[in-house]
Image (cartoon, rainbow, N blue to C red):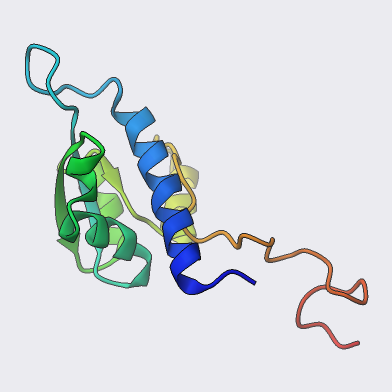
Length: 133
């Protein structure tokens, strides 16, 4: 089983890769400067990787000029993206699905909550995790 620090590192790497790809077409400073991106994230656990990257200077280290805004909830982060106040947001599955079903156009570029071992993988006896044996 992976340690929490290893899981955090993997999540940050996935987020940075996704954002680097997503920012490739973003408008940055003229003359080939650093890509600029605005992110909206809540101060709950799901938004932690974005805030940790900001506090530790990881965006800058990867050549990304990131502006991070804190929203009260993931739904508010989604509304910031849909309203044009942010390019990317950290959002839970329910607000994203609700928006998509409502006809809003959005794209998922990374999954920060996936289990590295597969949350629905069969357990050692063939049942799903947590099922009676």
